[in-house]
Structure formats: structure tokens, C-alpha cells
Image: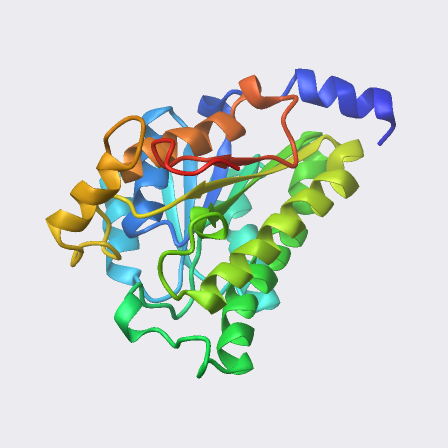
Length: 266
């Protein structure tokens, strides 16, 4: 694609209501909020799930013709290719946006995570496989669809723990840091094709499955440390994802938008 053609694609990128969107891990927690946000704006959504079959199928049943749920482990390239093919078959249109939200085999339990003196590289490797390899598989599998459409959007889900490492999530944070690097290098490499790659990063959300056991006192303490005096909700986070998927973000790529009530600065 020439530079001129890429520029034209940026100006003619589809509205969210005209898009087919893939959300990995889109059936539960933050992923579900992202799925519901896109549905609210009129998009058709492909939910990629690994273990959450029931939740994914319930969402599909609640939105007939607008949601398709497909099982895929993002670490397996063949399964991801099949996921993208199933999306195309279901909706008869190419993917316009992919959201890399899937999180593989991780427990948000600060007391239960390995500390610096005991963590093994295998723990890092597991998170890199789910977060980095998974994102690479999804983006590469979507490239043919993006080429057909003439543009594309990738939104990666990150964390504010780079700036505010208040819990010993060493493996998780390192993998997300690598995902930020991938966001910026892929943005530079894919930009001439009209593909924008961005990241939305948050902290503790009020409330998801992952934070359901968090005491109210912890939420309140975090809220007091933010300029907005509130803890970000999954719906608020999802709205920022919508921005990067929308034509309003046509000139934004390689960015990391921190959505945490102003707790930390990028």
C-alpha cells in the first residue's frame, strides 16, 4: 500500500457501528465490559474465549446475529487462524478492530504471587506466551482482513503497574511491558498500511471477577489517591478502548493511554 493510499484509509476508516470487532477473553470481567461497549455502539463482536464457554455462549444468545463466540487459545496460532476465519464466515466482513485482552493462567492475588527472591523464569515465560505470543498471533492472523478493509485497529490491554508497582506481579508486569514495546514497534511497522496499534492501561478496576475479593477499604484508599477520587470501572476503561477503535483516533498510533482516574502518569 502506498503512503497516499494509507492516508486515505485513515480518513475513511469505518465507524464503530460498521465494524466487526474481535475481543479476546471477551466473555468475562473487563473483556465482557469491552464486548458490551462495542455492542452498545452497534458493532458486531467476535468473542474469543478459552475456558469461559458458558459465559461466551450466553452473550451470543443474548445478541443473536451480532455476537459469535469461538473457542481459541491465543497461544496456538492455528486456533487463532481458525478464530479469525470463523469471524469472517459468521459476518461476511473483515475484522476492523482486534482487542488483545486475553490473560492466560494468572491469579490477581498479591499474597499468592511469587516474590523477587523466589520467582522462576518459567513464570515469566508463561505470561510472555499468553500476553506477547498471543498478541502476535492475533495481529498477524488479522492482517489479511485489515488489508481487505484498507485499514485496521489493534488495541492492547496493559497495566499501570509499570509506574505504580504496588503488588509483586513481576511476571504479569514484565509481559505487559513487553506488550507496550510491541505496541510501539508494530505501530511503526504497520502504520504505512493504515493500521493503528495502541494500548489502554489500567490498574485495579471496581469491580471485575479479578478484583471481587478486594476489600472496600482498599478501593477507598486508591480512590483517595486519585484526582477524581474514584476507582475506574470496567465500563469506563472500555470507553477508552472505543476511542482507539473509532475514526476519532485516526491519527493516534503507538500510544499508551492510562485510564486509572489520574493515579499515575505515563
